[in-house]
Image (cartoon, rainbow, N blue to C red):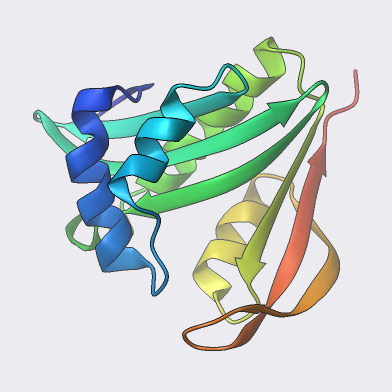
Length: 146
């Protein structure tokens, strides 16, 4: 498996994974817009030429908000999410990021476990943050000390 920067040619496959994963998915154009910004970093996981997952963040100085993490259903439970996030955290650190934040559905125990395994800690709750279905979000953070 190879972890690399997302390109515009990846947008169609990334969007397909987004639609199969989330009840309120981003559009293909949303990903293309994100890729065009200097403050973003998006990575994909590629296996035998097939995109099997993606993740990304928006950076502001020493902080980054991780906004997308998804693995195609056929590739889940193989460590791909962990590998992608390790790559994303490393890239962010190299860009000067020292605090990473994200929101995750409070009922998504698999994702919460993944983030916790990387050192993220729950810092709060956003009530009713998600729709389709309505659900709270856990706010999680990872602060890297020098």
